[in-house]
Length: 327
Ligand SMILES: C[S@@+](CC[C@H](N)C(=O)[O-])C[C@H]1O[C@@H](n2cnc3c(N)ncnc32)[C@H](O)[C@@H]1O
Image 1: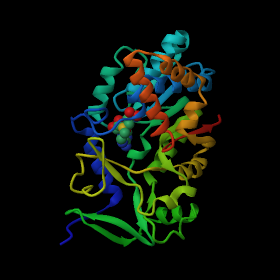
Image 2 (image 1 turned 90 degrees about the horizontal axis):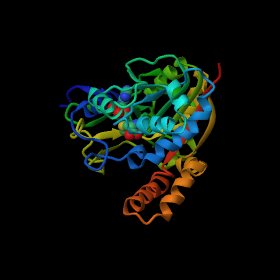
Image 3 (image 1 turned 90 degrees about the vertical axis):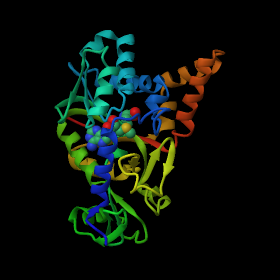
């Protein structure tokens, strides 16, 4: 008895929403995973230093952050602006798009010192930049193999049925994946919908995505797909279905698809690079790395180790994509 069947996409959407809306700690040492902003403030400072010249020409530059977690990255970006250029900081409107009320409450507490932060449930008009760190990997994906799509039964069994959604067939053809017959291919239709929202929202400016992911050239490294769960800093592959809602379920971001489909919404790619290269291209990051390396204080030695984690274990797995929409 299979019970009711839902697409893997619907299963993942429900599981991710339930997870982020439940009131328990998710990010950090007492939670399920670390993110780069939680490792060290230099991550947010590096982003702030990178973003400022991109948006300073706007009278009231908007930073729209998608899925802001604890609000740590927003805090570090605004703190950097207020410390180094208060007049510019005063002009910035920092807007957060966040689905989970539980995470929003945490963000409001973190960001209480700043007056220019607001929260939205829709995409406002943006002259400035849309930014996200580990947001796109939380978006649900359809999974296909050959001409079948993955469904999940009520009792957590995987069932393969004919692909019905024409958008999936269109995606496979457009991305040139229709010859990858034995592979579990992930179809990011929700991410594409978000790209459209970003393209529509941006009057002029940029979209910066930081996340773990792959390009079409690397897809062959993932014959079984990239879906995993995280719980207490461990990767869960076996009990994904029975632990739904209690664990963080993610899929790597297909950056080639984001670049290709972004063009439909006037988002032109500026660069795609590894997080390591992005950080090492920043003189601010290097300066902080060298200062911490030279320090004898236990706290700064610890911070140096965390920056190395950002560079080494996250540095290659994570990519940074910048897209631009011209007025
Ligand atoms: C992995 S956390 C990343 C948090 C933060 N950006 C960081 O780097 O620490 C994902 C964030 O996106 C939010 N989120 C997930 N799916 C979302 C959706 N569909 N719409 C809005 N926010 C979402 C979660 O509530 C959470 O705040």
